[in-house]
Image 1: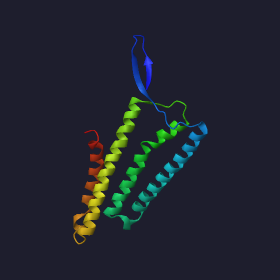
Image 2 (image 1 turned 90 degrees about the vertical axis):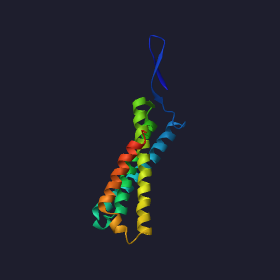
Image 3 (image 1 turned 60 degrees about the horizontal axis):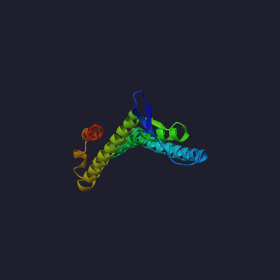
Length: 162
């Protein structure tokens, strides 16, 4: 933790010092390149799923709309942590403020909660499609799918602070 001394012989903690991986500078650059390439692959893979779903009318079904939303969530999920980690690989000053730490913590766990809700809704969708195939089109309508997607996003961000 980083402390600043004040004249009254007390300390104020303003942030955390991130230790990271204890390796030489060349090792940190290698780790930066590896994580950056993996990050770009994750972004491109999820973006291609989103583009495929929204460009092809045949994929405008609940299963693929849920998958596109899940891919969108995954983009934000990794973006909540990886860019900061990449910056810390190349930085000599590895300090994160309390506010920055709190925001990263909040978004990371909110996106994680949202992911759990999406997985539950996707499992429910597959349950209806497999166990109730004749009723599936009348049960899983576009309106219900939109309600479930909105509920996942709202509950994911409200669930974590509770």
